[in-house]
Image 1 (cartoon, rainbow, N blue to C red):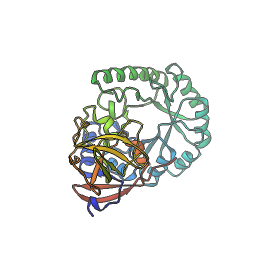
Image 2: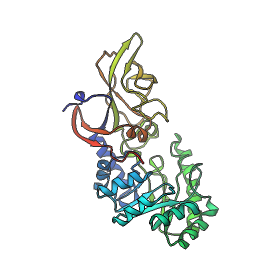
Image 3: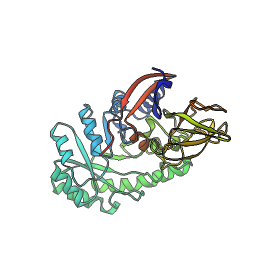
Image 4: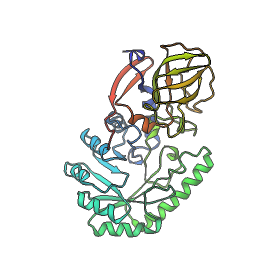
Length: 346
């Protein structure tokens, strides 16, 4: 099958670029140094490719993601990097033979782990992002409470999500260092062998964590493409031009197909005006946007007609993947495989 035989909008992965991204990361952070975060791609097929590159432990944001990994034979070491108050499904995974660790930051989440049958936890610490996690000064007390509840405390986790997207490299490094100083202070009180942190934006400057929770590096998006990372854009959406007017054109890729929380997508060789529910309005021949150090080679022509195909690059990979049931792996104009996005949902 050729790419242009696909109905649109169609989610595409450039197969060779994906493999190059996985290989680059595996060489830099081999084995247990990386715990890939599957919330970015939500696909057991991609997780299996990460496992083939030597990364056997995974982290996830939802119980559904962990259930899918375990069902696919990828349950060797799973981390729910999130708090939940009903861990009964996690306990079922433990009883089925998967190793499951859960993030805790309060007496309530500790009790949920105990009641649900989860035996191992990480103390989640707030290191600057105003989201989950206990205060640094409370981490030791949370760990002690977990141990009193009969749980094994493997260590700590934190996420410097407030700095991973900073464009200035020096500011990103400084913010990461300050966050990790807080996490290491908590770890000194908690103990355990694991310091879990990081993301695609700080994968190479977070030198304190024992494992890095990067996920977007495999597919990339326009938000990360501006940071000068050694990973190329693998993900795009194939769209069809459905209307042409003087001064603009419209493709069938809209809000229902794209994660928009990081802004408009990019159409190489064109200027995106706006997105609506089912449509993307753009001006061909005005390359107002680029992907920085991650160039792609599917530019929109200066003139388009109804029926022409264009490539649309999402600004945020995670929610974009969640909008689609399948992703097509391509090389050149050939469709090699189609993979289900089978870790969607809760």
